[in-house]
Image (tube, rainbow, N blue to C red; front, side):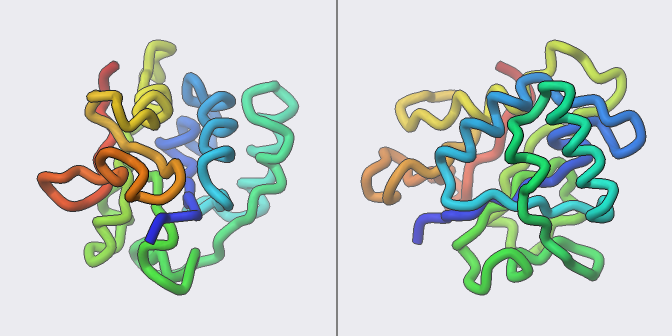
Length: 174
């Protein structure tokens, strides 16, 4: 089954945190890219929905995110880990882009796309989202994730790390 939904974490993944709200370098182009690769994008974060909406609106007004970002579906959840069955009823329909291992449900690790933490000092040279975007090309040998492009049979590696039989993880470097 090809994942058709990408669940996005906010803090440490797309922005610094809910207090400073520094957008990660390449945020706008990354969001535009993944919107074209998945049928649906959803927000899956510990940040309350009202605060997420304010942050998203700010990012849009500042030109750091596309206009549709402020209207992104928000996933309500509870518990100590992010369970992808809150996003889609069948495991494998959704992937989670997140920087923090402790929030990922341990039995759902095959559907976790790990990105490096975007943390202080919030370098303008951070490449976490750029690497994820560039690794969309199945012929690219970088150590990142291949976001879905059609059926897995049509891609060289099915968007998976063949050695681990799980989605490849995004590297911290170029």
